[in-house]
Image (cartoon, rainbow, N blue to C red; front, side, top):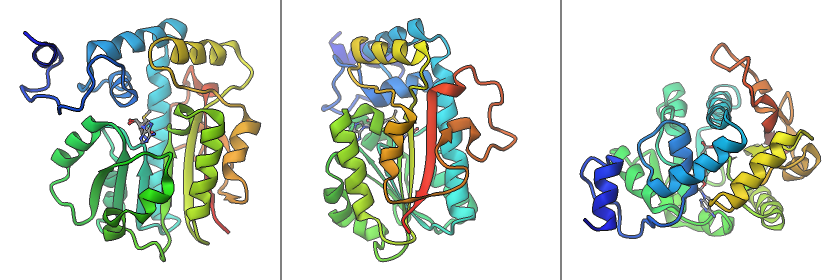
Amino acid sequence: MDDRATARAADGLDGAAPPPDVDLGTPSIARLYDYVLGGKEHFEVDRRAADALYEAVPETSQLAKDNRNHLRRAVQWLVREAGIRQIVDLGSGLPTVGNVHELAQAVDPGVHVVYVDNDPLVLAHGRALLSDETTTTVITADVREPETIFADPRTAELIDLQQPYAVIAASILHHLDDDVAYDVAARIRAQLHSGCYVLISNFLDDDEPRAKELERAFLEGGLGTGRFRTWAEQRRFYDGLEMVEPGLVYANDWKPDHLTPTESRVHTLYAAGVARKP
Ligand SMILES: C[S@@+](CC[C@H](N)C(=O)[O-])C[C@H]1O[C@@H](n2cnc3c(N)ncnc32)[C@H](O)[C@@H]1O
């Protein structure tokens, strides 16, 4: 059996061949994240990279769940309370429980969503999930070039950039090096006009040893990215924007509801915020 056939058999891709540009020899952020969230779209190489994370912090899956939980509340708030009807989700990840378009369209079916990711599997699964592309689409692009994404005709088909919109950068900036992450955040802010929002979440270095240990496991355990940033470092992402209450906080402390974990053992390892361009 060749590698792809082995992967199909072992990884339960329902008999479907992975797209030819899927690299089975290198861990992928999207697939590893799917694995720690309990999904099905991952390969041995991703699980091995995840093992390094579990060794450093056994509650690593909870970190991903806390992030998804914040994303759920923040998207619902953006649509319900801030009146947002257009969303560009950068580094959107593989489809999972509670996708952004489902959350937003549960509040208003007319919300338009453009998903952006650079992982070929995200495009393949996104296309399969989205039977109706009149409100939602997925495009392959690099978030390190935000201007290209906003200038893309496929974005323009769904997002009227003259009207308010929200940009989501959840759990993506920590996969970029410091200088690149600050630069990308600044270039995203430059795209926003008054009344637009940005949602950001990032691993947090709150001066506890687990942050350093997990960062080392991300950087040296196969994935090669995953920066834990201090509060001060993360505040830079929101430069010149108005923070929505309660500001930049532990992810679970952002407008918690009855579904928010109250006893997460990784509470202090994730920060999140939502901000508005004044
Ligand atoms: C950890 S997942 C986060 C998924 C989702 N945003 C969430 O918070 O649940 C990060 C995603 O960013 C994507 N990604 C990483 N680097 C990227 C880049 N330079 N351009 C576009 N997507 C990227 C990965 O493929 C992955 O799907």
